[in-house]
Length: 265
Image (cartoon, rainbow, N blue to C red; front, side, top):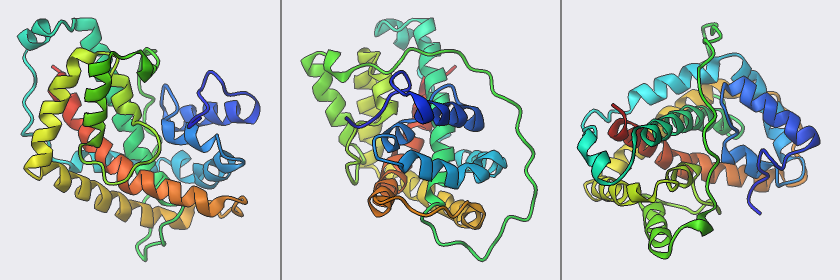
């Protein structure tokens, strides 16, 4: 088991999930938090340590800067006839874009916020007060599918896509790809785009830019977290967070932004 889903959560875990959704202004809890919930006291330690920098609006501010800093203007939008040919209707297209927008919003916050837990504080400090942003509007999206429900070729292609640009395994499939696997006819399109930008080096450049920009923000925020004593498996938890914030999210954030631009109008 790599996660406690939002439907399975009870007691304090369910309460923290609700707090995360409210504080991060998200319709769902990202996998990284659901994975932490499987380890004793990990979710509590990480969330109560980091909530101040999320609640202040600082993480959201720097996350917005991070998303804007990644140049994906070279991606062309997929024309309407292409969606018709592969059998994806307007409502499904809208659901894809809403899902990707939420994943990009969450991933950009979490790479900055979670990295602050282990990043050495920068000599630069926050010199401004952050206003609470207006609440976002979002709809209830379909839950992530069970990958076992995919057909054989679909599963194989999903695995191939998941290897593109992957530097280290985090132990579970990216939620972004799991969400898009609901529309398996889209998988060849995703493979084509991502394999091309991996081959020509653009994906690597975007990953490095994501890491560098996020690290710079995390170092400034590290001074402002709650320094709560680590749980028994604190070292193990930090190693997992480093895998996710240095390997997993730096890949998935640019991928999500690219796919959003590709699929949106």
